[in-house]
Image (cartoon, rainbow, N blue to C red):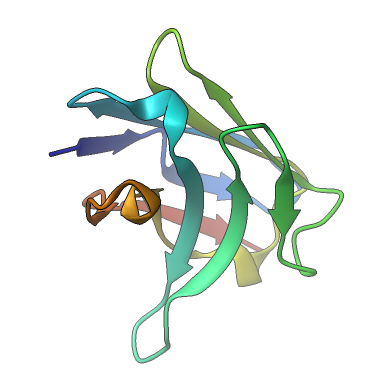
Length: 118
C-alpha cells in the first residue's frame, strides 16, 4: 500500500513558477514508475510527465521545456518544477505511483490545485 500526499500548489501569475511535491509512504518507492497528471472540470485526466525507476522521462508536448519531473528516492518524494506557467496550465495536479509491474496497484494522491492568472 502506497499513500501519496501532494503539496506546493497555489495561485501564480502567468510566467511564474511553482514546485509541486508528492511525498510517498509505504515502501518500494524507488522501484516504481511515477508521474504527474492534471485534470480540469469536465475533462479527462491528462498526463503531464512520467519518470521510470531508472530515471527515463516523458512529457506532454504542451509542457516540454517548461516543466521538469524529478524524484528523490532517499526521501520517497516526487517533484514537478513548473516554469513559465500559462493560464492553460490551471488544473488539479495529481501524483501517481504505478506499482502494477510488481503486482500491486496504481496509486494516486488527492491532488493539489494550480491556478495561473493572466
